[in-house]
Amino acid sequence: MASTDSEQDSIKSTEATFVSHLIELRNRLLKGVGAILAIFLVAAPFANDLYEILAAPLMQALPAGNTMISTEPHGPFFVPFKFAFAVSVAVAMPILLYQIWSFVAPGLYKKEKRLVIPLLVSSTLLFYLGILFAYFVVFPIIFLFFTASAPDGVAVMTDISAYLGFVLKLFFAFGIAFEVPVATVLMVRMGVTTPDSLSEKRPYIIVSAFVVGMLLTPPDIFSQTMLAFPVWLLFEIGLFFSRRIYKNKLAQAKLDESMDSEDIDNEEYDEIDAEMEKAAKEYHRDS
Image (cartoon, rainbow, N blue to C red; front, side, top):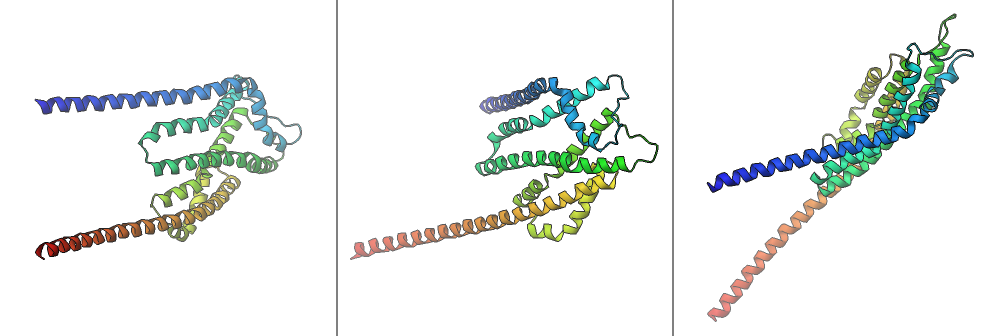
């Protein structure tokens, strides 16, 4: 009977813990969504200005007299607001990551907490860096090439909705691609692989970078190449830092091993001292 009551108490405790986790998750999600909506309310009045900034690389590459168009009646109204919402999500990304961190932090060890915070900061900065690289480096080059390669008699007038989908796809692709150093360091830190193993697989990783560029970018060689080369460079940067982390990890392992051996030696010395003390007492008693 007592065991049944204890089992029921254990089940109730588990259910209460599960419900509390769900409530905590709901609160974190509400805070994240609230942050996005708050930023969107600030950005919405400037939706047209934000879209003009987004369209600047294409507008500068278009021949004189060519403009952007809207093939949908509601396009001029809704498309800028869609981009304003996307900007709100990007700006709120640190808040969203902080909410995720706050939810999972209680279940992490101190070493894991020290590792997670730098990874969150570096991954966020690299994601933003990928977006900036796409806007300031990639867009001017590919749009100039696209508009210059148009056949005679073809007026390049891009639909604003199609343009938004195109650039958001590139933003996402370059933002994710710039996370390669973080992924490299994580794999080495978790023991999935070693820097030497990654270095040996460099040719395969380069080919994979071009494959990823083909899958994530529009079907043109320029976008694929301009994504693949930064991925390769970022892999080399991640490999450099992973070598240092791996050396520190090996040094820490050797230090822990030596400390363990010293503990064993100390235990042996204590046993010897105890035996000698016991033998001395028996000698004095006999004498």
